[in-house]
Image (cartoon, rainbow, N blue to C red; front, side):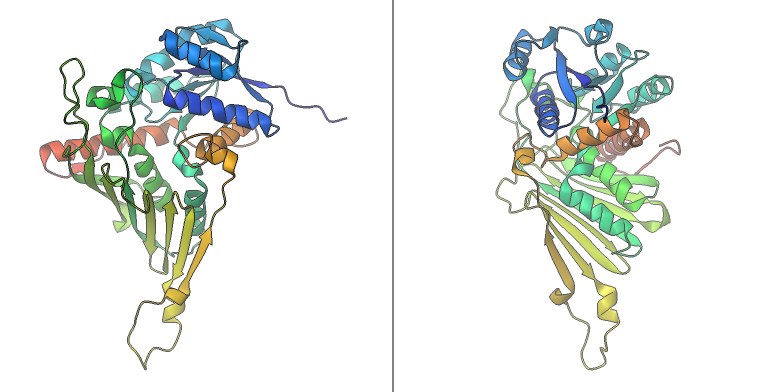
Length: 376
């Protein structure tokens, strides 16, 4: 007779847009046969706690503060989905308890806070995982697999374009101000900087950026304050061995076929993926070079490009805004809790993505390239 593993009990600290998405995906894991369940939610806002009860049922335990989740002693894991600038304070209430922690991106909003978290995480008795779910988007995962499998040869350039809609409203409008978010290139784009590092496998050396707030939120006022989050930027990241990354961000581009495009080009070929179309293309220039070409000049060869649509289950797509990636992130996190895999997204990974975003904002402010610290 096979013994089933015990049910993993999750708490969620912060039940806004992302907290609710985490809850939906954990519930979906349970519906797919994994033994996980959300049993508690902590949020200082009464309306958020009531929303959690509507979503999760009358039996859910509700608390005002994250520390109460730990004090209750009836959980295995906590997802920290509170506003960015509160992550450090929430974690302070959870360190030392035998809880596995998944911290939403960005890890923190400043390098100093990230460093404090790195120090405290070393002695924490549970796992600490940073919520870089973009790694788990099916077409992005396929792109990374192709690069690591040698399809492009030696990666030389990574270009990421996100042309999308403005930031969504969030509870209390906290995401309208740099003080709370860390700035757009930390809040949103830490995902992309993390992907660059994952793809090229090299240490980032310097960052040069240009960006501004030109269109979005200029007519909004919150307690008399005008939002200060930038809405467009170019960011160049130089890596070891001459590898370069480019981020092209525009957040007033709803009229776009592709919201995200990721292109990796190397000495043998090119891999690109497109979202939300879930499309991957693999092109091999080394195949063209292997054919006789004396009779005609080099030209573009679409017949050397393989195009693959990566399927994603409909229930995963409907469970959030991240193309099914939150589900797969939680599946891997649960496997790690049960000792079936290693932590995939470390505190160091999260801190490095923030460091690149902070450097990009500083580059914009100072009009010069910013060298990254050797500790990054």
